[in-house]
Image (cartoon, rainbow, N blue to C red; front, side, top):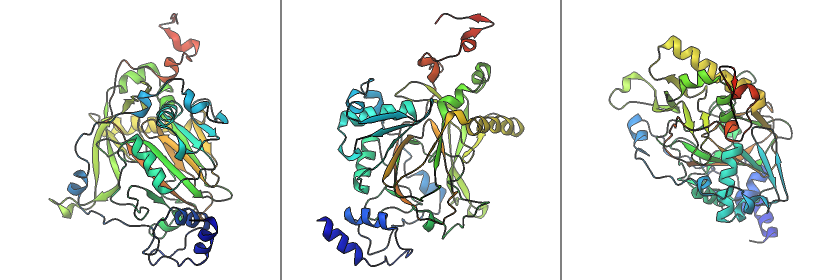
Length: 387
């Protein structure tokens, strides 16, 4: 469709019949250009399952996962040489790439991007001309795209989640003191049998001020722990719960309950082979085998290590048309609501599911693998080890 015709169609656009908030103009232009059917309401809302058993059965069989980053060329030459600029935003986490369109990447570049995300945790691309369909296609390259039974999606493009705080606020009111669920440190989909790998959020509409997103490195959070403390938690299992509650068919009178899965507290990334701390305050409920007092003390400390060390975090200011791709196996994130809902914000998110989480006691830390240890970290009982 010609650009002039697109503009004319937008002018004549009828507000959707359902969820009639009125889309922000940049979002409307993007969705119309992509041919998304908006006349029957936006977004599409799936039927919400009521029962635990139904949700458990959605993806309850182990699936083979071939990690794109694990098969990538380690130098990442095809990806990095094609960019006009590559900037590491902090020492431990976050890289921005300029001069590339995600929709145009070759398979080799997609593999190398997956490896870069695995190494740097989150990678940013501004000024992306990207439809929801193209976003889903990239997600499918990285793994099975998660289709969430509870959240709104782009009509006709299942698995592309709509991130629209103004719409979400019609169900759960946000305020300065209680800004909402995404405005706390968390990792999505930890309750899955095979939780999230690469997550891709594209924001077409952002506030002029505020609305930043923060990420923290699980590699570095693990490295903040003393070697003896690491030994204590290595190999431990924890229970992770869903964001949404459901009813138990066999005991509906018990009230809302959460999906729960048991995964390693420390996991290893298949592309890098590095250990990462894998907890988040919102959805890690307990460490298997510990009494409540022990659990609360240790988990509380691990949450604090992750959340309070600003040197292992990156804070990113969005601009319209920006994509962020991060690895949920090695990060937590937090969406700042400091714009207070006074400006429109809209985006779409695709989450690619990865492998069953695993732990390898022989895996190194990130800084150990890269030869970045401080001199005192190379000592055992006061003796400097050869490196």
